[in-house]
Image 1: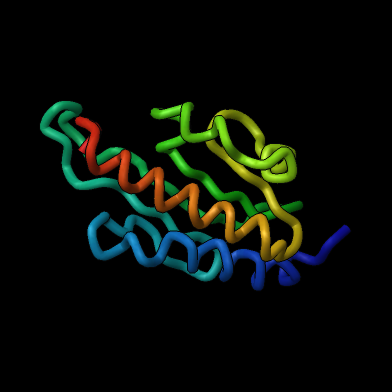
Image 2 (image 1 turned 180 degrees about the horizontal axis):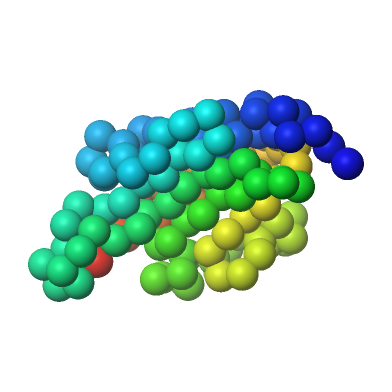
Length: 122
């Protein structure tokens, strides 16, 4: 089994995908094992809506991206390789840095952010 500390480089790379959006979203957690962003307060929903997070778990690092849950069409063009890392409807799990998949996830996050800000979620 992989040591928990082996996941820090994976976590840092996944966190770096989310970090650029912290300027326009709300940072809810920023620690050595977790980074989480919420959208601005939503008049429609009367609360801040979860946008995404990176979090070190026991056996992998999870990357949550709520826009793919709210707009499932965003997943229509993802690669089969990235799809294999999905658990549930909006979570991707990784045990190691996978540059090409992280590049693809970065593009998906950008598209998700654009949709998140356009829609009436925010």
